[in-house]
Amino acid sequence: MTMKKMALGSALVLSMASMAAAERGSDGQLNIIYWQAPSILNPYLSGGTKDVESSSMVIEPLGRYDQDGALVPYLAKEIPTVANGGVSEDLTSITWTLKEGLLWSDGTTVTSADVKFTADYCMHPEGGCAQASFFDGVTSVEAIDDLTVKVTFNQPKPNPYGPFMGGQSPIIQAAQFADCLGAKAPECTEANFGPIGTGPFRVTDFRPNDVIQFEANPNYRDPAKPAFATVTFKGGGDATAAGRAVMETGEFDYAWNMQLAPDVLAKMAEGGKGKPIAAFGSLVERLEMNLTDPSPELDAETRSTRAAPHPFLSDEKVRRALSMAIDRNLLVEIGYGTAGRPTCNLVPAPKVFASDNTGCLTQDIAGANALLDEAGWVDSDGDGVRDKDGKKLAILYQTSTNAVRQDFQALIKQWWSEIGVETELRNLDASVFFGGDPGSPDTFQKFYADVEMYANNFNGTDPQQYLAAYRCGNEPKPESQWQGENINRFCDPEYDKLIDELARTGDIEKRGEIGKKMNDMLTKDSMTIIPLVDRGRVSAHALSLGGVVLNTWDSELWNIADWHRIK
View 1: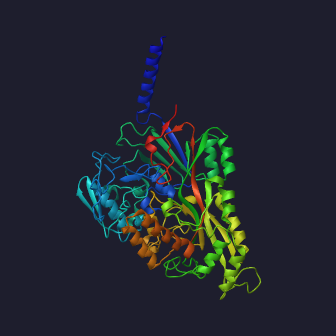
View 2: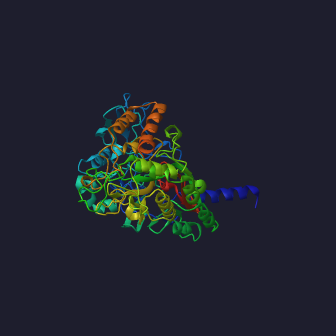
View 3: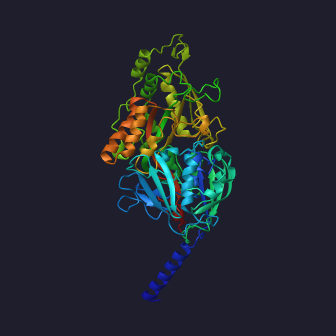
């Protein structure tokens, strides 16, 4: 065979391979494991990352953030800006234009009415929208024509990319959710478990807290995608089992959130089936201090609500002493290695928003004891537990079941015992803890404990919406079906003023100054949130899985339409 014929033959093979790869469903089955099992496929009814990310395979926003934090259009034709006329010059409105020809997975047309309905759904006064802060300051959402929707704000909004941006704020189908507004939202099981979407996949079966089956969406806008015909999304278990299933046994193709010690990850990678991937973003493991009383002796309308202040965590000196007793450097060493950094900030990135708050990085047991003495908390009966006015410093400290988190709990319990605090540890199944079931007593939103530990972050590179979550009234409560993002029930009118100031400030340096001040109010000044570790996002994928681009600014499954099998 001549070199020319060989070259032609190779070209033909490559061409045929490309054609095969370009055929929807040609790569067969994809297996994903999230050890925190999804409990619902509607992110507007759950703040849990596992629910947001599994939903993102089906329902999509107008725009997303890519792996560098840049805004990219998805359902929208382009990202609106002042330059292209999409954002008004006075910054009080943003107008989005949908791509032409978009279809829902049931074959019906996507229109601006669906976008407007999504806003009505989340902003309903009787609803309990978990993502309400995305619509902070929105006064109206209007469908101008079938493809155009206009969002108007109550003041100039230099960062208008809250509603409909990122995996936490997708578009839902008006026809499917029409009877699910307000208090009826949690009752719409069929819609919440099987949303009709525009994404690359559609749900064929969903067993809450267990497994989801997907198939390729026949009406997806790119006829060559997705490469996989079906997906099994397994939930539950633990991070160790998930890591082994990808890197050692090869049973699964992708495992999310490998919250494992670094030596454990390295050992798993030796299995030769997969590899860990990591990137830093804005994910912070922290302690939330409950500013309300979670006592089971209170009635259901009062327990863990602002109607009943916490008997001792309302004392800033107690919260500060609890923080001072913690050795964050040791937590990083045992839990994350190079995939973690000790932090005192709720917002550790990007740099312009990261406060120089470093005061918590040195453990100070003696100082914590002195502070509690000063506040009048003493061990009056010699049992090793401080008390005041007949109330013991006894804490119920809860988190999700995970080896690293249980190691953290054990260490923090020991340090708190050294300052006269009694600690009861509780760990809950992650699928339940991060679920949105308003009837469950065990969700992190309901917060039936004194202290709880978890991590989350924000979409994109601007924390405006994230920080706005702590506005007075945004706390979970019975009348909001226990949905809401202000988990510790923080309320400060001065903080609320900063939310509004940040919303109308355009200069990035000034935005950074305001963001830092807000971060410090929640952490350094009030200690209502006690940050522990700036966590790198660590997941794992099979060596045979191509197209994976780890994204710390949006859903990890943001580009699953591009995933494919490496032959």
